[in-house]
Image: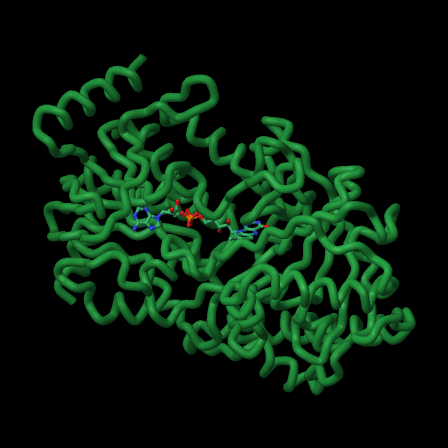
Amino acid sequence: MKILFLMFMTLFVALVSGTSPASVIIVGAGMSGISAAKKLQESGIHDFLILEATNRIAGRIHKTQFGGHTVEKGANWLHGVGGPEKNPMFEIAKTIKLKNYYSDFSNVSLNTYKQEGGKYPKEEVEAALSKTESNEEFGTEFAEKLSANKDVDDDMSLLAAERLNNMEPKTPLERMVDFYSFDGEQAEAPRVTSLKHVLPRPEYSLYGEGEYFVADERGFEGIVHEIAKTCLAYKDGRVIDARLYYNKVVTEIEYSVTGVTIKTEDGKVFHARTAIISPSVGVLQSNLIKFKPELPLWKRRAIDEFSLGIYTKIFLKFPRKFWPTGPGTEFFFYVHERRGYYAIWQQLENEYPGSNIMFVTVADQESIRIEQQPDEETKAEIMEVLRKIFGKHIPDATDIMIPRWNSDRLYKGTFSNWPAGYTDEKHDHLRAPIGSLYFTGEHTHRELFGYADGAYFAGADTAKDVINCIKRQVCKGKVNMNI
Ligand SMILES: Cc1cc2nc3c(=O)[nH]c(=O)nc-3n(C[C@H](O)[C@H](O)[C@H](O)COP(=O)(O)OP(=O)(O)OC[C@H]3O[C@@H](n4cnc5c(N)ncnc54)[C@H](O)[C@@H]3O)c2cc1C
């Protein structure tokens, strides 16, 4: 009832004045923006607006229809079970009974194919895997030593740690296993990735091992909707809250210590006391949003030096199944002299029996290359790889879907990666408020950057700062305004 009344008032004022007064404007309705809205609502701050560039909530969590089934263009896996902490994503998934399936990655050594076809002997793959395990163990111990020294913010790349361990991957097979272990998680190569901030990935130490693949017609975004229902008005499963504005691409943010004026591409102007900025670090690195005054150098450096990886799941539908199914066959791997060339494959027989759908994951430079070429060219490359693996007789894919996260001006990539040498102080700057501007998004979470749970916590943390400012006049942003 309260929510409906507020919706009405907001609409009324907006119609009368042509502007929208608010305590807070949240830019972006992804996981972090919605999580921030939930926190504001819980604290009694109801006069917030959300300006979302697209016509949906959830951002990089994005289901779509493909080959008669719901697949995820974006976030897909829920991380960890049985650890000391509970993953909030998993808890919500449980509440709404979101279908998810344990991903069995244990069969790499049995299902790894050579560049020209034929499987690698199990022992050879196991040798490559043990090299990567050794790198992970050595790197984790070394990362602990680096973190233990609180006087110096010392770091190195994952690749440097592999070299220190005398285990730099050299052969195409070793590079594929390395790609699967590191690029497959960070969406960037060990050459650029921070040792200290990714070994071990905190998701596993906090929540426990294991990854669970969401395959449900409500999509992974069902989790975002479940959170949104706590703070936005819904009818028939759709958000009808007048405080959420769709199709509002923010292009200009004028800010001071006391307020913000936000302009959108369609010429609308919004005013508020504070703003929470949630688009990806890639969007902040682009010129889509112009800040007035320009953000200070320390802030721009913190933004520009952080990294947004690119991770692409290419979905394919076939007229019939020609790959093995059953236990231990969910994943298979392809080794090519070019690192990460159509390396990681997953078939969806487990999740969608009889669907004849599978997908291949590429990342980083391969993602960029593939985004730039026509789908037909990518399909031809993929069919060549599959024919090397399964033989010349296999049918062509009847459908292909290639998400283009990097080319999309509203994302510019998929999830953030902590670059080697990027200091904790810089990361403090990345999330630090300036005047009335507060920053959130997965990239602003110190430990859980990159993934959906990080976005969830980041949104709540930023909202807490805003609440402190509005309700208790403890405004962190004032401190930084003139630096
Ligand atoms: C391919 C892929 C695979 C992934 N896999 C996993 C996984 O398996 N598990 C996992 O936990 N996480 C995964 N993630 C990461 C996870 O999806 C993100 O960390 C999380 O969704 C980020 O939420 P966010 O709110 O920080 O950002 P976003 O989701 O990007 O939200 C920001 C919102 O701002 C909007 N916006 C952008 N620019 C503007 C503008 N100028 N004006 C107004 N609105 C704007 C966007 O449309 C978006 O809705 C994956 C992501 C991708 C893309």
